[in-house]
Image (tube, rainbow, N blue to C red; front, side, top):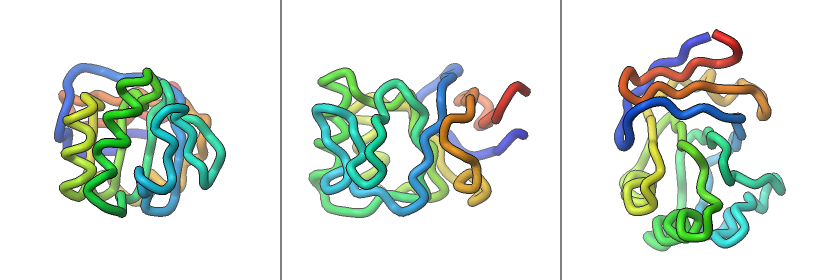
Length: 129
């Protein structure tokens, strides 16, 4: 399966395990910036590809994203259905590749599947394709 979106930051290809968070994510309240753990699902984003519908929260969220990067706990990429300004700023500050405008069916995938994110083409390849 191939999902198409729009790359906002980053280039090249990123591969890894997909982590799905089906609700809008607050980086300030839901994510521990030092450990990389999403508190609401008790899963680490470190070295994974994080998929979210959108983000929510305050202007402090980008600093938590930067903290993830500083402590080596950042996701390899963030995939979103809709990216707001704070999510985009945070991804750029933390140098985390980000793709948005992905179809909602992204959120129907299960955590743990392997994805290949082609940032140059705006494509997410799911599984062994």
